[in-house]
Length: 309
Length: 301
Image (cartoon, rainbow over all chains, first blue to last red; front, side, top):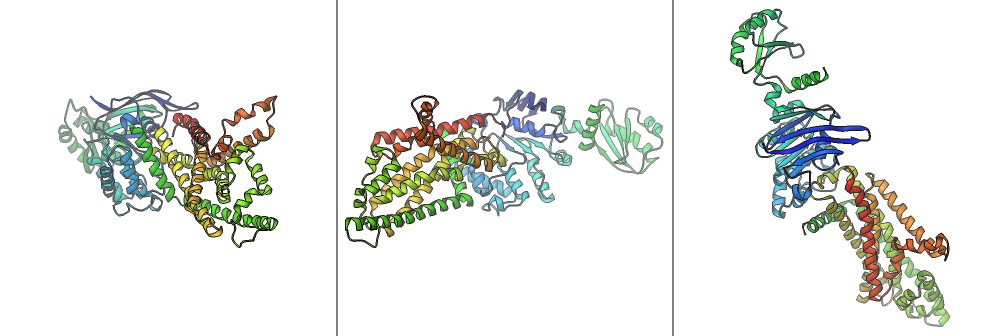
């Protein structure tokens, strides 16, 4: 498989502290991958290392099969939305994005067109000539997102792209990013797991500078191996439930008030489980919804619990 | 070729951005105002000197300054002042007979340019590193193109401010000094602007080279001020403390590394010293810049 990004045993040390501690991660081409991890887990450091902002202590980066980041090879093909980085305050969005397009090797006309289209896409078509200084935090964030997509780069790294946006813009940007699926390789680092779940098709859990797990979203949330029953209260008779669905592993999540049923998809299907388990469950409790797969938050928290134990 | 194009793109944007920044504009206008005021006060002084000279030589006194500037050059007092200022017989020879307005402007431009450079450009790189703005550029072009582009942008900016100050000074001279409104004088003043511009390049390299070392704009400005002060101190030490033996015998060698030591070449009329001076100063500017860049190349941004 052709990987857009491959990092092997990446180490980044700040004094005695290791921000990246042998992080190995491969990102398939055209994947929309979410990076999930605690504060200080190494997500931003990894992105900055891939983009060439940080000099790694050891390990290797292979970007688009052309080695580590090199402006001569990757200019215009890889872009990033860096975290906590201000745009030049006196610049105007249209001029700034055109300038960035020119630096990426676009012609003046193509750069101007691409800048105008992107600004319109992020709902800033009426503010193209306002100084960045005069834009609100959310508007600046949208300019930052827009600059990433100038000239249709192959790889886009987005560090906390939706933080600071209002709910309407969050929904719009989620839809915008999701529409790029299959056209560009996009990496998103975010603490908002719902956003990641909605947008991404691949997930990487990063903990303490290492990759804890990399899988497709379906695998992570167990879409093909988990059924979640929202119930009114915890079932009293687990034995009856286990007898009805002997191939299933049942557990109760009190926070979500849900019965989580995990099964081996090679041995039975969701329909089999439903057919046998649901009558037994309804005999004990009201069931409001049945969904295939858990949510990313539960999967992430379970992953942390598993790794700690 | 692509690198040069990228440098030019960064430079052009840097220039536009600096012009839009109110602070840079204020400094430019202040510099122009300083040139105009200096010219105005110097003409007042010149007028007083001429009046004294005219009464001594029993020439008719004029209401406007500049009428007896040729006679002024013949006065021993004026020659003594010039000799003290230049401290170089060849330079004095080249300057003899030049219009006093030219000399006043040249003195002003050479004296204030290092300060202008530090105030306008000393923090441009540190500011971008500190705010993170550099991160939007260095994945689109190389770090060296970015640094060189910022430098070239500021070189253009300083050139523009010197040009404006020259025009301002000429305008004052035209209205205050008799017979000064000639195109020749404007061209001569602009020529001094050009020389001062070349003189600014090593200071620009020094200030912007140092600016690579920090993320704080104010720290970069302070470092720049300390650096040019250090250059002037070394220059004074070379002039006044050089001896034939001991450590002080090595002082003149340090002069090669500071811009002030090559300044006198720019006061000459002949092509050879001028070209030598231009070459030395531009090379020195790039050396300073590259020294700072060498640190930036390896640093995390």
